[in-house]
Amino acid sequence: MKKLICALFCIGYTVSGLAQGNTYKQEPTKFEGMAMTPPMGWNSWNTFATDIDEELVKETADIMVASGMKDAGYTYIVLDDGWMTRERDEEGNLVPDPEKFPNGMKALVDYVHSKGLKFGLYNCAGTKTCAGYPGTRGYEYQDARFYASLGIDFLKYDWCNTEGITAKEAYTTMSNALKKAGRPIVFSLCEWGDNDPWEWAEPVGNMWRISGDIYPCFDCEHKHPENWSSWGFMKIIDMRKGIRKYSGPDHWNDFDMLEVGNGMTVAEDRSHFAMWCMVASPLIAGNDFREMTDETLEILTNKDMIAINQDKLGIQGFRYSAEDGLEVWAKPLSNGDWAMTFLNRSESDKKINFDWSENAIKDELNNISTSFDTTVYNIKNIWEDKKAGTTKKNFKSKIAPHDVVTLRLIKKN
Image 1 (tube, rainbow, N blue to C red):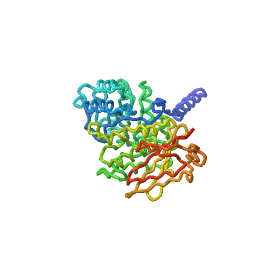
Image 2 (cartoon, rainbow, N blue to C red):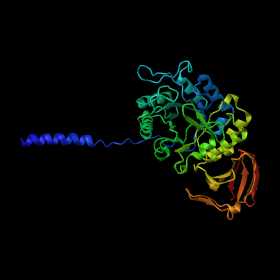
Image 3 (cartoon, rainbow, N blue to C red):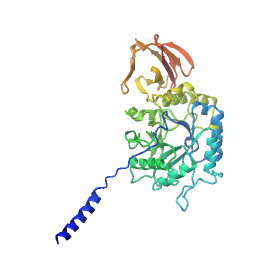
Image 4 (tube, rainbow, N blue to C red):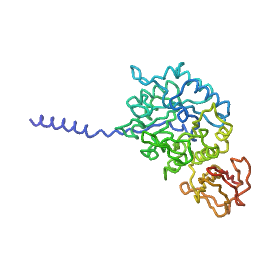
């Protein structure tokens, strides 16, 4: 009897122990070192939404090479929502739309690779994508193997139709699935900042969106009938406080795709691009390259601005001062240099008369500072592509509404 009681007790204890002992925790295992500087490329969504096809991708790749964008650093061509059929096949596989991609997705990926570029695709953590195509929920490892078989290099992963799941776990599952599939892929989290991804996503992905979708305007909110909003680029700049400490090499705050060339003024396009460079955001163009103006191309390929964005320190810039509609932004750079951007948020011209001796710039977060009383810098006015004296004299200029002046302060030896 004692043996029976003991046996029953032990069995009950073991079952209870197993029930209470499920303490395994899923740990993310992203591919490290995939984005040591902010990724640069092109995405189809801003201009084309789901109206995408094989010809568009090939033309975009050709122009990216011929226009000098590839040489400027633009590497990725990313197809956003709408590349697949409305349903998976009988085995649960995603199916590239045969009407949009008659030669198949693998042939298109190979074409982009033949141009020395990289290829990306889109999907979503939910049951359906934002446009109603098959989402990845429940198919993470199957889809990851499919992406690896295609040879893609980048995955943008959205957050629509995700009721009942948590962002951290969903994105961690997909991160692990990509790693298990074995092909190094940049993982771009598009969760809109709703679940504070900057606090947990560094080991999960290489970049994470901090806001809802961008809209081609300076400082507006565009309300959609479905009760959500898109945001002007300055609204996005202002949206999150205190997150710059989470950004750096291989783990970037993503301020969304660029709207340069999509209907704003040249001054606003210039400001938009300058601010994305200052905050070390990925530079993912979203315009139609086939209709790109010379002004748009010049902005997107400005080598000195791109150098600020791609600086190896990977420090997100910060607002140094703001007064009467005129903001001054600062970004520490390698070799002791600094980038300084003067931004006119007002509707009237502003005069700049910046006395360096009265403005000791310090990045408190990274403990990097300079005193212009003891250190002299040569100044390059980037958008005018000319030298602008040194910090021994006040910097004077006039700045139009919604425009910027960006300077590189080059430390003298």
